[in-house]
Length: 312
Ligand SMILES: Nc1ncnc2c1ncn2[C@@H]1O[C@H](COP(=O)(O)OP(=O)(O)OP(=O)(O)O)[C@@H](O)[C@H]1O
Image (cartoon, rainbow, N blue to C red; front, side):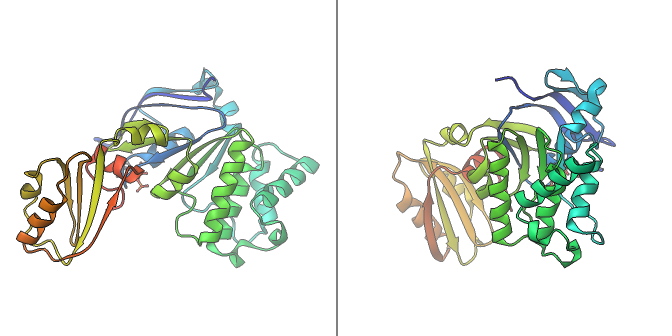
């Protein structure tokens, strides 16, 4: 299958600070490509460039095999953008909002009405279409934001953290609608901090850190790198007095991460070392309160690749 978008060696600096370095990836039709990365990793910069809202210094973006530069107008018509901050007008009705944004893509008359109705039904807001968004919950506003971005039926939909700070019901609604958009053939580029969302909806994942892509693959392929490892999550009263080196000296221990009252130890599966880990912690004066073992998760992939958790 041919990619709908190809991004090649993208670079972007803000003053002297490099925000993106050698970013290359493809987007295929009918996929949900999740961008995962901590604050400041470069996710928004990447998708703002893709949205044509931000210039880049070097690199190339192709849409259906052709450079975007000369075809920017054609490309923009096929983009639906759901920004991180709500982009709706509070003082006009939900329907008027959707019609306004869809009209920017050239829709008029009956077609405009039909598409607006479809988009509002799609996000579950048909019954509230004559109401103004100022009377909506945060989740409903987010859904309206999505309706505004998809009414013109774009081939590529870019969503920047569309579920931040909303109730679980709206969140589920949004995730379900994203999967339906994919099933209808759209390509969705989705950024999030929430690992669970990535587990739930992604067909492919790009992990970005410090402005570079450090992994690109399906959930399954990314987790393969962890087949040999397991993770101990240990809660303690506090970690004052713990020397990480003592844990690293234990056979099989690969990574240690120490928080205020939490310790994560990644260790090789084949080596029985739990008794030594516990002994070392007790010897250092730790009061263990809880312990759990995890097998491969995206959080662990992220930890392995970056040495950090996604949400510190
Ligand atoms: N307009 C700007 N001016 C200066 N620096 C910027 C600007 N926008 C982003 N940056 C810097 O570029 C880097 C990447 O930021 P970006 O917003 O893309 O990260 P992010 O992964 O989207 O983070 P978040 O999850 O917090 O949105 C950061 O170091 C940020 O401080």
